[in-house]
Length: 108
Length: 108
DNA sequence: AGACTATATGCTTCTAGAGTGATATACCAA
DNA sequence: TTGGTATATCACTCTAGAAGCATATAGTCT
Image (cartoon, rainbow over all chains, first blue to last red; front, top):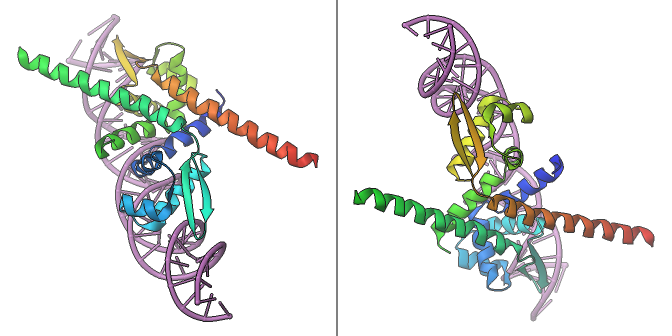
């Protein structure tokens, strides 16, 4: 893989490497939402939410649609969830292994 | 998904969000390698490579094996490549779309 | 046009983490 | 034990990027 492609891929991973953005994506998984709705549900401040949405949009992960003065955002690529599922299931497995190792040690 | 799990997942994405670490993983894809070999092939400095390897190990993405004074690292979870492939193929598609949009505009 | 609402953008501060050189540690050999 | 090599860790500097506040922009209504 080329140096340039590695940079792109790394950048994409970093986009997903922010808990707040994952929370936004999770909210949007339920369907499109306006900035205001997201701010309310995530209990965040508006400029911050807007900035994260900008980053997600630049990455092509979400899309926007204007309606009056509101702007609605929606997931534009469900790949995100595949990625999260992969990582998640791995974390779960890892936790289980750690737990079992601990339990096994205790038993001796 | 719980707040805590989101943090874990985000952390994992950040681990992959570093071009240098992706390069290391790419090198290791060909088979296990010692720190010295990696340093030579990546043309980096040793402490830096060691630190990245530490991070990858903590994340459970690679494993180590001692042999004399050398330590050999190897991929311990091929999931990494699935993740990269997903992101990569998406980037490629995106580039193609952009290229075609540009070409279409030129033609007018 | 002016007032009002929703969203985006600038600017500043602050922190996580990457790079680097010096040094510590672990192993082997004589 | 001493010397030599491979790897890890420490201490430091530096930069990217996240949060937060103030302000700009875009749209709607009267």
